[in-house]
Length: 321
Image (cartoon, rainbow, N blue to C red; front, side):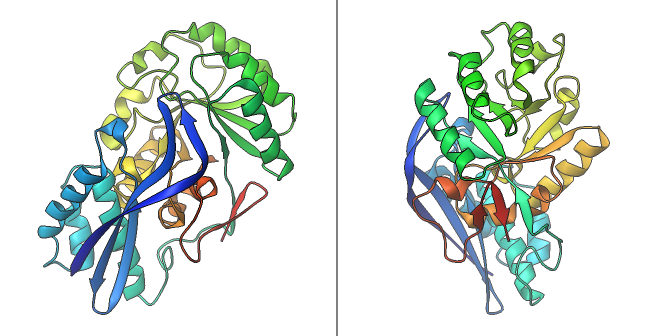
C-alpha cells in the first residue's frame, strides 16, 4: 500500500464560535491509500482541545503508516487499532474502510452498511450575543431545520434559549455547553430550562469533573462529548450521562466507533453522532453511526465555504444521500 497525507485549509462561511473561542478556517488532513489500482480516502480534523495540531497529526500518520504499508487493507485496519485514538488514526481508518469498499466494487458505506436515505441533522448556532444567535436560529428555521444545536458559554444561558424557543414551539433544541457550566448552579439551571422543551444538554461540565453531575437530578437528557472518546471511559460515565456523542476524530475511526456504539447500547446509553468541522468526506464516514443514532449533528459541510466534489446534500435540516 502507498499512504499519503495532505493538509487542507478551508475558509468558513462565517466565524464559528464555541465557549473556548472562535475560528475562521477549518484545518483538515486527508489520507489517501493506494492499493491494487484503487484509492481510498479519509479525512480528520486535528483538534487543539485534545493536544492535536496539523503538524502533530501529519507526524503520527507518517509514523503509523510505516508499520502498515506491507499489510493487506483489512489486516492493516486491525493492526491500526493498537495505535492511540485520535484524528490521525481516524483518517487512516476511514481511508481503509473506503479502500475495502472499492476492492469489493462498491462505494462506502456499501457493501457493509445500509444507511437511511434521509437523516435529520442538527443545524449549529454558534456562541454570540442574543440578537445574533436568534437571527441565525431564525434563518435555519425558515430554511426548514427541525433540530437546532445551540452552542453556549456560561453567560445569559436561559435568556438566549428562551429567545430561540420563542421563534418556534416545534423545533427541537439541543444545547452544547462545551464544558463551560461548572461554575453555575446546575440544578437550578436545569430546572429553568425544562419549560423550554430542551431535547438534550451536551457536556455541561469539564471532562474529568463529570462526577459533579451524579447528585443532580437530570430532568433533561445529558450527553457526554469531551469526556467520551473510546470504550475505556464508558463505565465512569454511566451514572453521569444518559447519552454519548460519538465522533470519529475522538474514537480514532469508524472501527472503534462501532465498538463504542455497541458497548454503550449494552450499558443503556443513547447515541449522538457528532462531528468536528469538516467536509462531506468526514461526514460520510460517520453515516453508519448516524443512521441509528437518536441525535445526529453532521452539519460540518454547511458551515464551510466549499466542500468536496460529490458532497452530501443538505435540505430542510436533513442530510440526504
